[in-house]
Length: 89
Length: 420
Image 1 (cartoon, rainbow over the protein chains, first blue to last red):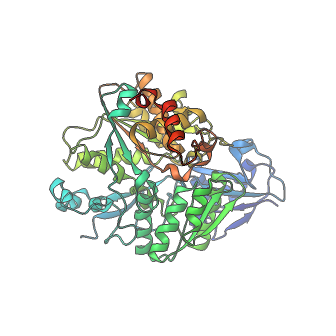
Image 2: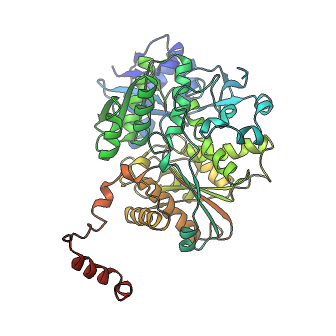
């Protein structure tokens, strides 16, 4: 199953886990599944149906904005990372 | 000084408050965290007279910087010259032009010494012994040097392929310099994971709220050196998009404290390179969502951030203040570097070429009025980015140690002089 990597400061909302295995074939499906298990995490990542402005999501090393956004396909061996956008510069 | 002056952190989106800690984003909505102050407490000791009597470093503005105690890192940073640039003004056809020259900042010749002074002094307050950064070069130099002077261990992560001067400028201080196969945004993403994983103080990740406050001192110095007033126009380079906002915030804080003559009506203008223009494209297209640039291509490597953290706020500020943003190609960048050097004797890095070239364009477009005051922010030093100049500048003429050969040369260079 694909793995979703949780940023350290949000681990209180993922049962303390830094990596969660989630079933699904797209980023959207993974997040739906993740949100069903950890509703507080979903609330922090999404504003309605959209990812919040300062949330970046990567499938392996690629930003999903350069792929198909939430519709980006995810394989069983992929790693999805949630990264806060407000860094750098 | 009262510990209550710096109150904590606050989310710029939802306003949620956080204590003073090493955290850069709101855990409710991922919004950026910003340092908040008790301005009544600040005003007790901070005024024109008090500031004017203090030492010549950025710490003369200590009450508006995010430390609880005295600075311990970067004590000599700042107070760079605000140069009245009349020869350049003549070429540009404007009446009141200034260069804020951070190319001579201490100790590493860029404005980054300001943010690093603030961030590493805070890191010491927090008790970090290992610090780091994601950098396009100047920040790497500054973290490496200031960490060395403070006895801190430093991890500096850069994209592979930076200018030699910037790589050496980090290596010389003994920092652990790691070049990442990828662009800056990939370096930045990795640093976001490293900082929390290892519990280190990364100046532009978990220490970013404190780090960014250091940039305000550019604005404080500009206003003080103009005789406690804000200029009509500021042109700032934009990479992550933080600096332009902090310069404006500095003016607004001085205004709030009653330290300026007149209200702040400054138009904030942002400069980018065409090969990496996510913020200027946002402004020019009139949209609110910043589209990241996947593969930045520009000689202005210090501005090559394709996914700017503060792009949203920078473009909003530019619109709200009546400013504008534009971007320029590599050739214009080098031309502007030469223009600044030949008219004012200031050798800036490629980013400075970007800022001046965009200033020229905004003047030509009528977006900057020719009879108003203009401050151009030069943030880095030309010694560090020599590569793009090597092919553009002629080699020196070589002659024998002979008076005849020299006379012949002068005749060629300056015929009128040779005839005398």
